[in-house]
Image 1 (cartoon, rainbow, N blue to C red):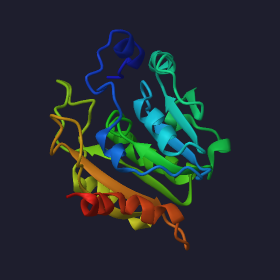
Image 2 (tube, rainbow, N blue to C red; image 1 turned 180 degrees about the vertical axis):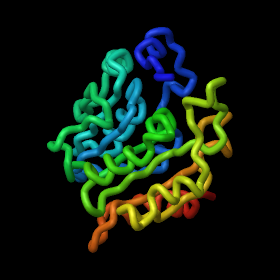
Image 3 (cartoon, one colour; image 1 turned 30 degrees about the vertical axis):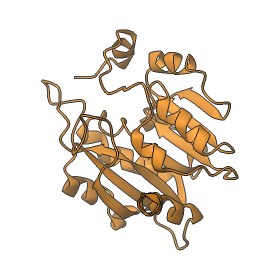
Length: 220
């Protein structure tokens, strides 16, 4: 059954929205000179988009959502100037999006689409992300699903690895349990860092793979 996302937002029936950015984003150090395009699919009220705009103050951060109500509420949060909110269906992005995105932050989009749409999601990412560009995010493993089985829809690690394997245009660089995450979600989210395959190394990759290492080194 199709979810009425506008009604969910208007009725504040949004238990996935914690009214703050995902805690993992706190591990990313600012990149003030990075003139890149960042995509936040299913951005909801825009908490993660706002956080990424502060991490990348020179970037264009684009939050898209299928719910107009969500975007209306996101606009009320006084988004940073480099955030653009767009009403869009991720599966209907036009050709102007092709090879236009350097970095995708995934949090609550992949888990919200029907499992049968996951291959289509991958194909959208392969189309819009530049070669060498990155897709990083939280993917639900054991989140409590609705009475009808979702959303949210969980994804077994082996299924995710199969969808985004090298033969399908992606290279997974890191995966494991998400830490830090929201209180109560411990052990329910899988962190994945991947890139769209290319013959050259994206200069951001080392930076994205290193925040956790630097954080551990900086800890007393």
